[in-house]
Length: 425
Figure (cartoon, one colour):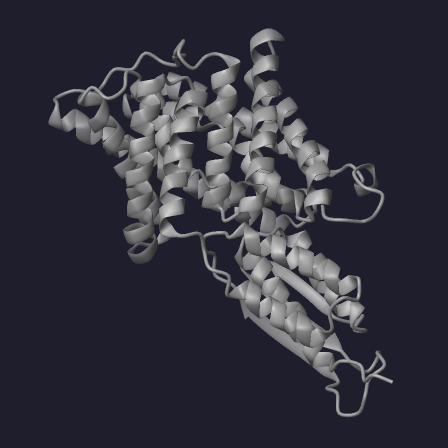
């Protein structure tokens, strides 16, 4: 008869799996579920896992489980996990590993070896991240109304911006200073290209250029955590996301003030514009595909899932356009409807793809994020037009709340509606 795994070894493996998940952008409930699944499979049903935004507390007692001689009677481990750029391919890999363990295809040592392989998986190469940022910036410029020249300018800004992020900002700057500098650089580049004649709508160029800076992972995970009653982690992550939005707004405002100082006056913008070049549904679908797949690459999603994320992003954006343009829904209600569709499609896609629905939600929801509202709030605030600033800021908040409600409503549906077995969710 095979000897049962050592009690402390089981919890070590469970803790390592939780560390990888939390470090790379998994929501709290998934971390706890997978850690419990691993421990239970190997006969340790008394492990206790307390997961926070940036730490995991693991403890357990061996005197209640069947054990061989020499096992420890108690186990305790505190693991601090600093935030870093998410690599969602690792979340997918650990999720699949947990189901392989549950199916009995791996013993403890094989699971430990697989975790080490997952931990050492390289990030996306710098060229792929830079190219993805350029593609997504150009795509989102079209989504928010830019013409072909505006998209080209935003694409160039995205390429330069992410080169700066990869080689300078992420290495040598703190999160807050780096966030402000990134938004400042992006906005100055947009203004510079516009003054040189590359692009017609400065607002659409800047909105596209700042989109790669949107903190989509902490925003989406914060919502998921709140929906799962993980209030501390949810509020912490949403605060982190709000800080990211604040850094973007501050960077945009400083760029306009600097340009106004150099040219003796603020640039006067006329509000939302829609270029007839990219207004059609065909171009909008292509822009949504580019923007969504670009973010999938930036967040380290498996390349095999790029097309899935792109299709979900296209459908979500088409739902928004149809309800907003032809059914006369308000922007918040259209966003709520589209967010529901994105989340439902993500849950269906997660089962055959054997990955968390979160992978598709994070990327697919980006077409709905109120990036334009953030820009106009910052611009009007800089121009001392407080009424317009408040109006645009309040609309951005309403759209964000609508997206939150859409995610919560879709995730409340039972998993059995999406698959006959208990699978990835």
